[in-house]
Image (cartoon, rainbow, N blue to C red):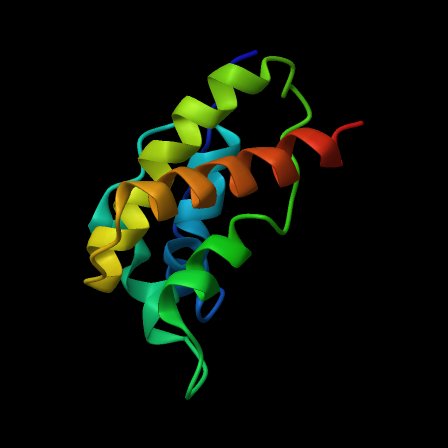
Length: 114
């Protein structure tokens, strides 16, 4: 299933900021590559004393991908999401933690569709 995202400027105040804050989520739902820079507006909205990495990864779990049918494929894709979020947050993590975070993200996406 392919998803096409369209965005056009309009007169609504904050539209661009809202789009940029939701960009990682939109890209995740479209299964597009999330760049480290895509997290910048969301990271700027992180509440004080909140873990930035978990804030980003938790945010990507707020909606489910309705076409999630291949769990293995989602685990591989979610590993790229985790790597991108780690880079954006400036966090170093051992491979075990990267794998765990990838599995957790894929699990929430995959099971939310069931």
